[in-house]
Length: 115
Length: 109
Image 1 (tube, chains in turn purple, yellow):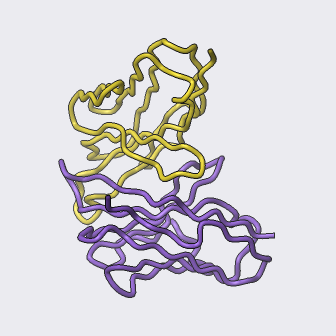
Image 2 (cartoon, chains in turn orange, yellow):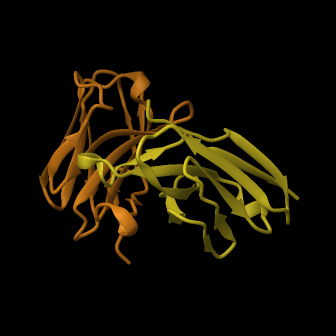
């Protein structure tokens, strides 16, 4: 049963520290998405990739967030420096593209707490 | 602005049919998706499509700018957050989903 995996599941850090979250998409999926879930905003899209190329990262605060796909099996989301307002659950999702076969499969999320 | 709207909370008694409504202002949207999310777990797809669909106890209605998720014979275990999303048919954003803020369903016995 193929699944999206995310590490770490939980991260507690202090303000100013660097945080790196990792995602392994489902093998064969060509789109990868990063979302942030908060009580106020629900699921916000931060960035997404197709065939490892970034398509849209307009949802990310550019000064501190960065997203990359070093290879087809790994996507990373980095926050440097982290701030308390970054505390949220971060989800990664992968999919095959668009149309009738489109479905985004989500990972279990990384719960980030910045003190 | 491309947005998806859904109520923040819905409450129901067990055994009833629950309807969660969703509408959007997303241009060129053509597919709706309904996801279920339990805290600590991965959100998972319940039903999707560009026409009315059914998967088990979950029915989805479809209009050009709105959709409803109907949960039949709702149970206490269905208490969770339900996300509505739509997909656009628009150039390079193909495959992107626009999500609502989620609806917290409460079910009382």
